[in-house]
Structure formats: C-alpha cells, structure tokens
Length: 207
Image 1 (spheres, rainbow, N blue to C red):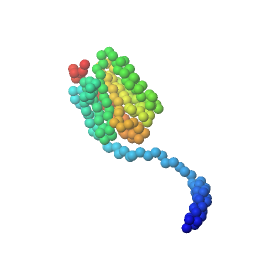
Image 2 (cartoon, helix red, strand yellow; image 1 turned 135 degrees about the vertical axis):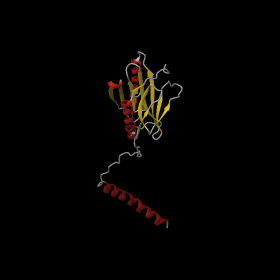
Image 3 (cartoon, one colour; image 1 turned 45 degrees about the horizontal axis):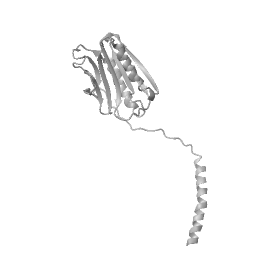
Image 4 (cartoon, rainbow, N blue to C red; image 1 turned 30 degrees about the vertical axis):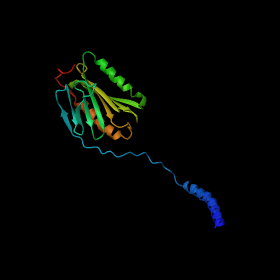
C-alpha cells in the first residue's frame, strides 16, 4: 500500500503543473475586466421646503427632511443654528455675526477656515450669488476630495449689518466619493437657502 501511495503521489505531482499550465493558457483567452468599486445605494427623499421665521435676524426656506436645532455648544453665539439631517448623519452649521464696520474680518475668517481643507482637497470651486434687490451677496465653495472634512462651505452678507456663514459636515469619517449623491442633495438645499435668504429686523439680542 505504501508503494502505491508513493506512485500515486508522484503522478499527482507530475499532473499538477500540467493542469495549472492548461488553466493559465485557457485563461488567456478571456479578457479580464476589473469591476468598478461599488457603494451602498442611497435612497433620497422627495423635497418640500418650508420657511424658517423666528426672532432670528434672518430667515430662509429649508427642506422638511432636516430639522433646525439652535446651537447650544460651549463656543456658540446668539442666532447660531444647525440644520440637522438625521437620515444622512449630516449637519450644516450656521454661524451669524452682526457687522460693525468689520466685514473684512469675517471674510478673512471664512478664507482661513477654507484654507484648512486645502491639504485634503483636489480642487475648490466657487459659485457667487448676487441678489441686490434683497441685499444678499454670497459665495458657495465646493471642496472636492475624498477626505475633505467639509465638502461645502458658504457665506452670505448684506455688506453692512449681517454676515451668515455655513459649513456642511458628516458624522462619519469622510469618504466623499460614496457620499456624493448626498452631498449633491444637500448642496441644492444650500443654494436654495441663499436664494431665499432675507434679512429681518430683530437685532437687539445680538452683541
């Protein structure tokens, strides 16, 4: 039995290279095409906008898919607001400043915040908004790059009294390739926010 086992092993040892060679040759006839990287499908809800009106010195239309939550963080200031998207684990942080002949300071702060994303950005594209009738002038920055922590930032101002800045963040580790449908979805809301933005009267609580 031992002799038969040795002979059988030798036959297998000789046959294995021949079989592998045939497999390699036959495989050469097929063109291998790697499959593209796939991501989970994200179902986006229908949009319906309602108007945010309160004692805040600004108002705008926002989608019902998000909820507005006053920012009560340690460093928050009056009239700061979060647009929370629980379905996507995303937030738009809105920070408001009253302008007292110091608009350039807030514009510089916005530029500094934007520059922090340069190391992980492939490109930064901007879109300007001018609505002279309602005194709304702004810029949206689209920060392209898989690992950019905030893919969209923006500001709007009347250049005299009001300055509103916003930034989109996700709760998860940034992977903006897979989040692209959601980023585009929320970018539409940001553009609509600026398009419907109005400056209102109450400013007594702002310091």
